[in-house]
Length: 111
Image (cartoon, rainbow, N blue to C red):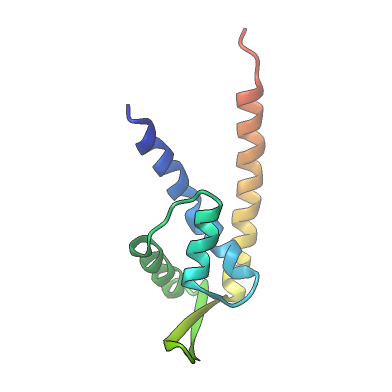
């Protein structure tokens, strides 16, 4: 079994959750999301991020607006919708339960 592949799959599983958390803090530009994810050691490329953002927008969880830039083309800034905030709150509860369950399992001593 390939360790690196398993690690990638684990990161992918929480990517949507992390992105929604980042967006929930306020307007954010995609490159800022990439920077934060990378600094947290969740390696993501634009080819993964943009389709995910499109999926979240089509699901009504995020929206964006174009903002003119003085140093180039307009930028797309993302915000979370009310529906997205409700969805994120549910994911947060699930995350908490999964964390607690995982900690319980990996902390168990062998018989």
